[in-house]
Length: 378
Image 1 (cartoon, helix red, strand yellow):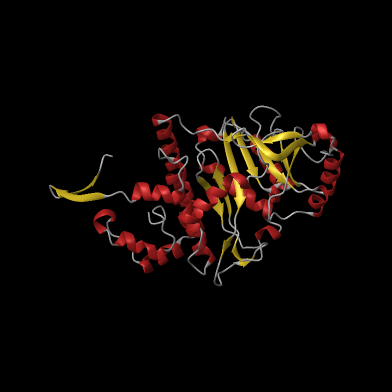
Image 2: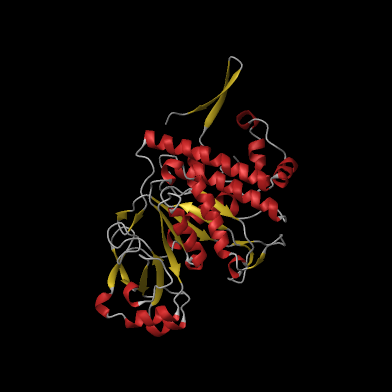
């Protein structure tokens, strides 16, 4: 409750503790610390298992009271089914904490990997990792674990028979991860992928070989033209022998923004290039179609990350990694409902929803020995 109310530290429980008539008995700070320390892997699994039926009930209620789960949009079009965004973010630690490490941005802290549902903005799953996680050999394993945990959070009626597009950044296009995505189809889960891809020498040669007439204007999310940006398809001029049939390469180039880091290839060409690997079909509804949005999932989930960091995982309270792992799971639990199931939640940031919903003026009254919370109907 404290995290859902916008708290960022265990000491913020004091706000709830001072309103005993509303919240009842609230644990002391030492009790809260002991609780977090006692959450082991079995307890984490139980928490995750409890979130899934709660989400299913909320989705059923959304279907009864509104039009149900909204469609994700790209290039001015509604995408079919669900869109999962896997993204890693850096969380700085200003003191020594277990498994905190130097990051690729020359900072120090953690590098959690998260999965958000693009349709409703809710956090589905996440795993806490050291700050140098992407430098190791377990990157694909981390993504597979988070993806499976996210799929387990989706109600069965939506998980089976509904198209599910999986989007991620360039570090995630490892063959093991792609093989896992394809294997999910054998289990009746209709998955497809749109992943960032490194601009390798093979890709650079293909980009240079593209004639100008094959470049098409790029679109913004609202279907308007993006100034100074173009997209093209490399599928027919690049070697895809190592990839499954139907895999496509999409390249996007645009005038570099001030301050952006450019490779030597980008400096030579005078444009910033981004490449995505996808098996979505060409044409309407394809998020990676020429003219579509940027290939990186990062652009769509920055606001989710910012919201999540205001719901708890912007800072981690303990020097112990296990306690911080439990804190991340509780933060994801607190982040889900206020993003997804309120009338105005499609556009609102978490802090705004906290202010609007949890800080409303009210009175506590007594009637017949019972307590009532009186909130204005307006």
